[in-house]
Image (cartoon, rainbow, N blue to C red; front, side, top):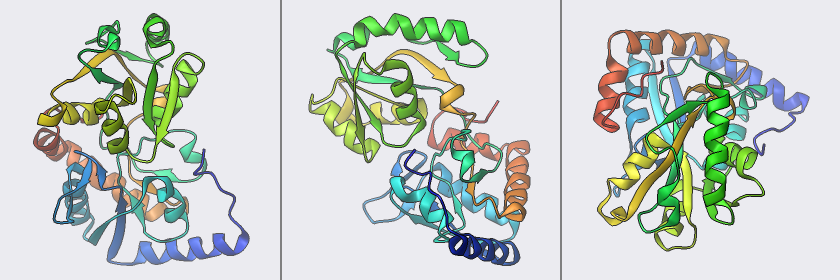
Amino acid sequence: MAFIRTLGLAAAAVIAATGFAVAQSKSITIATEGAYAPWNFTEASGKVVGYEVDLAADLCKRMKVECKVIATDWDGIIPGLNAGKYDAIMAGMTVTEKRKEVIDFSIPYGATPNGFLTTKSSPLAKLPGTGSTYSLVKDADAAKKAIEDMKALLKGKSVGVQVSTTNAAFVEKYFKGVADIREYKTTEQHDLDLAAGRIDATFAAMSYQNDVIKKPENKDFALAGATFTGEVLGIGVGVGLRKTDAALKASFDEAIKGALADGTIKTLSMKWFGFDVTPK
């Protein structure tokens, strides 16, 4: 993936020093994308809001540290972390084995299945399996059958995904050579192309897709086909951290456990998503 870079000894030394400083400090900076509603997004005023912004404030209070949330481009968010530009990532980032090669993660604080969004008039609106969710780990055979059942309708169709995401990895793995896969810098960009008829569908987390179809301008959009979890789609969304920041990871883990135990994550889920994204 684009995020995987080899660090020189000098860079590694800087990161190690930064990690030590963060562990000892009373303030941290958290990077988010600011363009992935309702996880995180930027209001017209320029203020970054969303589920993760509220959750970050809660977690930082539990950790007894001051937090600053900043917006940064998705495609550079992991390199920026490893370069010491900020201390953590909360940006709807799914925990995957591939990403764990270059950064560490807290325990998950959110999890939803992923699926297709199309237009009501599209043939893809009839994708089989709508309303069903399959785990690529626990229900591997059923999941792969559901994928095979979709291929006939998806053949030759264009599907938009955000670059360097688990959604892109899923579509590339299971629909390469079937659909025309188009990568976008942001999810907002592929939504605009779907509305304009330049692509036939998008594939993203259902927490995001559900928010998209609530917007009046997207009244002609429709969820379609089965949804999926696990394997290349990861185990849930967690805080991204440098591998050198073990103390900070432990603090986030403890804070997330507290937010799970007292229902804070469920409450924030209902506020921003309208359903519970608590990891199971």
